[in-house]
Length: 306
Image: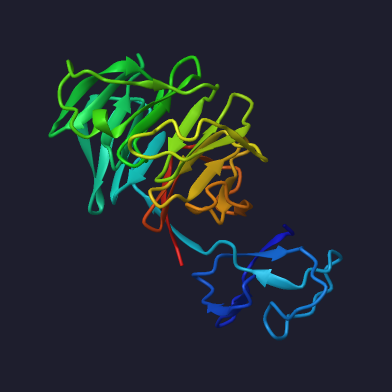
């Protein structure tokens, strides 16, 4: 991709899309425009009259890759997770919060990582002990994980202190309500420091920031098809939304989104840089059109896509 520029202060700016559609964005909505430097021999598949350019890369049109309006929220968090319309996070003191309306409500207990999704609300503390929120109480779950994710189809997954990935199928997650319930944690071969799942795929990154996807996952087969597919790129953390969308942050603090993920092609087609607070982001989570950001200074932003 070519350089990013801010929109002019005109009444509206036209963003031409790859599919040949044209839309007009107001300046306060279409925050960024990225030039596509892919070369095409002709324009029939694009809009009728692509704008000329003097760009040395000979880019033919503008693509509105990211149109987000971000709102800075009160409070400070080190990690956040959103799913099924709910928002949970933890601060530097391991205090747990949930977003109710326009304010934060503190929950009892201490966690270093919290997650919410179709399987409920789960978390891990400093000792890597696992908990599930049942009613208003945190119930101990057998096992040890340093990071946990409830975004799968009613299953949970995560990585332990040795970077070994595990998952727990629906049969053990939905009805779990007490510490002595029998569980069937399934070890997944591989080494990952962060592991996140959605409705049809799970994504992870290892200690070298290499990215992998596991396909064929579902509520009863949380291990998937048994194969890891390496995805080009480098990310320090990655999150899969409840709709299967994939977002991540690299070691430089930049946000990326995986293009064209679907049940038919879970691995998608490429990465798009989302130019929001470049170099300042450390954690992201996405749900229902909202991209939530935690910056390196623990500031919280709720970004909505238009």
